[in-house]
Image (cartoon, rainbow, N blue to C red; front, top):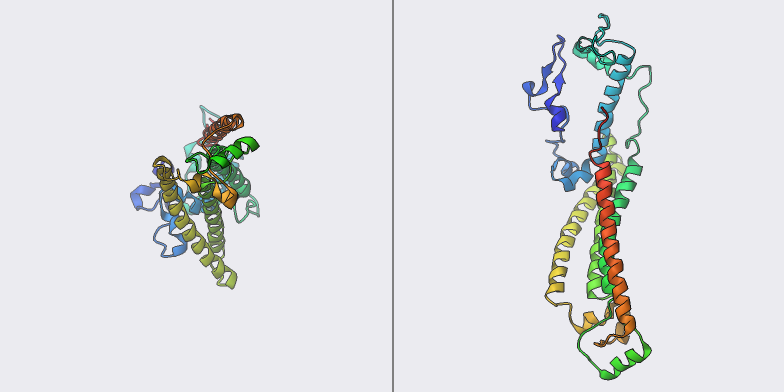
Length: 326
C-alpha cells in the first residue's frame, strides 16, 4: 500500500498530473477512517489480527484497481491513446512498451480510458473472485496448524497412564492383573481441548461477523429488518469473538503455569476422572504395555506437531509475496 501511494498521481482538468501527496493527505489506497459506525471499528485498526475485518472490502478495492488497469491495458493493446485527438506515439527502443505521451490526458479522458471496452462492464460478484475458495484454503491451513499442535499435546497426555500417589495397593495390583491402562481425558488434556475448541469458535464468530459486515456495507441504503439484524449480529459476534480470544489467551498461559507448577499433579487430574468418573483410580506402577503406549504417543505427537507446523510454513512461503512476473 505504501508503494502504491508513493507513486500515485492525480489527473487534472488541464492534463498535467500532480503527485497525490502534493495535494492532500488523501491517498490512492487507505483504510476507512472517520466513519462513526461501530460496525467498521475493526477495519481501521492496523494490527494484523484485524485483517479479518477488511478482507472482503480489500478484495473489492483490489478488483476496482485491477479492472481499471485491465481496461487501460486493453486500450493500449489496440493503440488507443488517452487523448483521442492525438495519434499513437510508438516507442522506438521497445515496441511492447507504451510511450509516456500516450498516457497524457485530462481527468475526464483518463476516467473514460479506464472504463471497460464495450457496453457491459466486467462481470463481478458482490463478494469478489474466488473468495470462498481462498477462505476455505486459508482456514483449512490455519485450523490444521491449530489442531495439529493442540491435538499433539492432547495425544501425548491422553495416552500417558495416570501416575501419582498409591491410593490402594489392591487397586494397583488389580490394574496390573487386568492390564488396564488408565488413560483418557484429564485436567491436562481437557485444558488443551478447551483451548482448541475456543480457538475454533473464535474463528467461526469472526468469520461470520466479517461476512455480515460486508453484507451490511453492500446494502447500507436499505433499512430493512434483515439489514438491521445482520448489523447487530455482526457487532455481537465480533465482540463475543474478541472476548473469547482474550480469555483463551489467558487460559493457555494459566494452563501452562498449572502444568509446570504441578497444580495438575493431584488425584483428581491424574486419575482421569473427567473420562472414567467414579470408577477410576490412581496407580504408580507401569506395565510393559504402558511404556509402549507412552512411547508411541510421544513419537506420534512430535510428528504431528512438527508436520503441521512445517506444512504451514511451506504454505506461507509459497503463497505469501510470490515472485512477480517481469
